[in-house]
Length: 266
Ligand SMILES: Cc1cc2nc3c(=O)[nH]c(=O)nc-3n(C[C@H](O)[C@H](O)[C@H](O)COP(=O)(O)OP(=O)(O)OC[C@H]3O[C@@H](n4cnc5c(N)ncnc54)[C@H](O)[C@@H]3O)c2cc1C
Image (cartoon, rainbow, N blue to C red; front, side):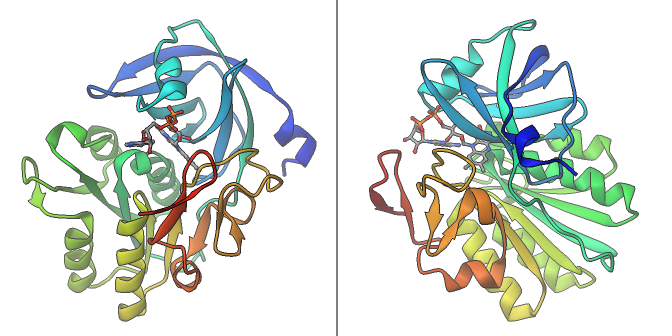
């Protein structure tokens, strides 16, 4: 059990390896481990710039899958093997298993696949069969497919433009997997609209579902309130919520806040 002091203490690692995954995503493996659960995240700190949350892709060695989309993530992409990374955490609740699942469906969009990779390994270790749906805009954006297949996970790819796998959203493949039967629970991380559609689908089919919300975060520890979704602080109460609970929040899949805290429609 990690106490709050340990969580909040800054820890410094060196980058052991960097793997380019596509034109804007790299996997950073650090030179140490962190005691963490799949679905938890760390606040990575770049001095004089900011701190941002990143999902844990592997705890031992500590690994992150990072897309260069803005100032902070581009700075991380400038780092080289041997450079230092300072962070605090792990934060958040993590995906929860009841112990009764035999087969689970994992649905990831974008870099949402990273925490699901960590979770798939936990499922395999517990003799639970994970099936992974990876949704992406196009073939180039499909992330971590080889990592999952190398672990022995069956992967279904969907792309919006049909350049790889099934043409359409990840929810199309998820529906087909649920219709085929045998899925005991669904776990998702990715764009909120995708997760809201999935949560509604699971509710209709009476299958338990957990969704991992990604909101702009300030402190990562439940103080600043920047990441709230309805009445929930995503960093401290989540980031993982039962689908049915998330659907009760008016914001879920509808509205988010931008970096300034202003509300925007998704
Ligand atoms: C719990 C949690 C876990 C996260 N895990 C990861 C992770 O594992 N890997 C990761 O790369 N990021 C992750 N993020 C997002 C990360 O914290 C930053 O928000 C992201 O790196 C962008 O920060 P930035 O300052 O570089 O860009 P910003 O200036 O914040 O954003 C630049 C522009 O890119 C857009 N944008 C932001 N993110 C994306 C995206 N992924 N795809 C397309 N456009 C985007 C923004 O809307 C904005 O228009 C996570 C966020 C949360 C809340």
